[in-house]
Amino acid sequence: MDNLRLYMVTWNVATRHPEEDLAEMLGFGTSVKQRTQERLPDFYAIGLQEVKSQPQNILMDAIFDDPWTNAYRDVLAKWDYVKVKTIRLQGLLLSLFCLRKHLLHLRDIETQYTRTGLGGMWGNKGAVTIRMSIYGCSVCFVNCHLTPHDHLLQERVTDYNNIIRSQLFRARETSNIFFHDYVFWIGDMNFRLVDGYRAEEIDCLIKKGELTTLLDKDQLRQVMSNGEAFSELSEHMPPFPPTYKFEFHSSKYDLKRRPSWTDRILYRVNANVYENLTLQAEQISYRSVEEYVQSDHKPVAGEFIIKVFSDYYERVVEFLPVDLWYVDEENSASYALSGDVQPTVWDWIGVFRDGFTSLDDYLCYVYAARGSVSGNRNSMVKKVVFPDTAVRVTGPYRLLYFSHNSGCVLGMSEAFEVGCRDNGQVTQFVCRDSY
Image (tube, rainbow, N blue to C red; front, top):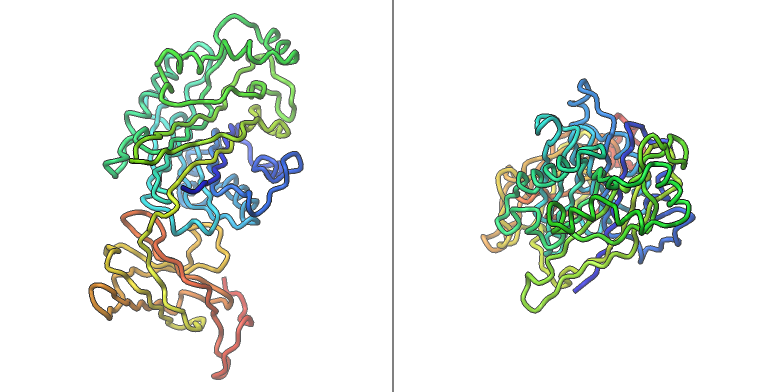
């Protein structure tokens, strides 16, 4: 089996827009050992809570990436990461990024969400989820924001049970969150410390480094132990101080609230679901990133190594070499469709600039079913024609084939050039940008 590195971040951003450099949080800063290409995480799952969301902006939020997603994307793009999927529920946001080399090995991407605010009527609290198969193993990422306040423990327990009961997925084998091979559950879970310490006493124990004494009073660990909630998951003992509540633009606790570990990363492995194979998740870091001060929460990051199949075969679409395209003209491309690929009428092919940083960045698309076919049932070659509005700027591009059923990329062409015709001559990289 092969190893994949997964990096998780959870942060309640308290309705603020990005103000600070996010590199440190993602493991690229000076306080973290310098990353090398060989040690880069294969995937980033970033869960935010209390992202600013106003009723008049709901439509815009659904169509365009928010400032936070763009800010993380800008950092990760430098290391050749691509945004695979984002799901948002009002202030809840979950984004998944992967190294470009993994794009063709993702399958059955689905999202779900659960509202728990106002008895399930409002999405200010709840959970958002992204699930998929990665090299043949099913992985589910959940980001939640549960009911706040010290005395509302049972409401948090109810929120959790509502989330696991309400979220169902299409694939029968993984129809439930906990049917997946790997589950990573992150978020502002809002569990506090049970009664017994005043805020000033907690602050004093933190300064003395007596974290274990405080964690013995942690509500989350208690409900996990007695089976009320989160008992299906595991968590390493947090080695960092409570992540809430701080004065804004400070690392000093706001003692109007009792400090607590509200922000957590939990996980689960169904280790023995495959014959003669044992799955495994090793947590190699769990930290609070204390340098960040713009919120009243500290972000929490964790890194894992998981086992996946090294010889898992994925059905793919092979693009034939694409000839030179021309701006403002119809252009075509061909691809080979092997017999074990089952296309649908809703599969589509998107035009992307080479070096794209999100699967949402297509410039134009055509439905694959509209193409002409040659060959036989065992090896079909299809030709598709793109309209003259598809590309209007010279430069390198790529084509991506998207499967409607599995929500993933089945094929990606090699980079090809787009040029201009000038009095019958072909000129590249001279057309004025018309976008």
